[in-house]
Length: 253
Image (tube, rainbow, N blue to C red; front, side):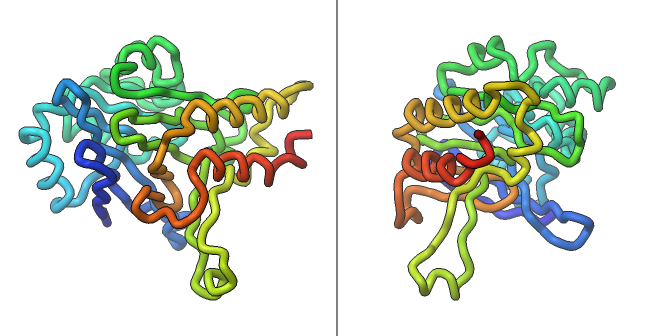
């Protein structure tokens, strides 16, 4: 598996992997290895690591013995779940309701990653957020909008799968002064719950997220790339999230 390692902070390693749509276009994927205040480690999402990445992870985690949990955060990100568990079989395995139903033979913890109970278990190091107003697990398996977003407090890093996308624009566009953009996933319209007020609920959630996590400096997004504080030559993540919300205002009416 193609893998690259991005050291966002001393205690936050973002692992960039490969995911090809239709076997042709590589839109990438991710997992993150985070060291907790206790000194133990947690994986955010799953990925089958390359040999080189495996060596680096093992060097950090005492050969994997210090990995205490794997948190699978996106209900439709399932390709690497089994491989990650097989590599770290002693780590507690957490997933969404869809993970549990897709892999009933794996030793899942009963508490799911979208549940408040899980968020309280890890609240010393992380904050969690689940979008409101949208289907968390869409009946349409091509709609992958929602996921559990995670903020690692110590490094001020947001780990997010499909919900938010960060895109670095190509050079011809950069010449015009447009370097990059943060967007909500294009399936937002299909993901909205089919009820009155769903759009407003989503708007309220996004505004609350921007305010609650206004001190965040780094963002690791799955199918695009990561934006670190060192690379950011534009607006703050707070302002970028609000700008992304403004771009979808017509969808939310």
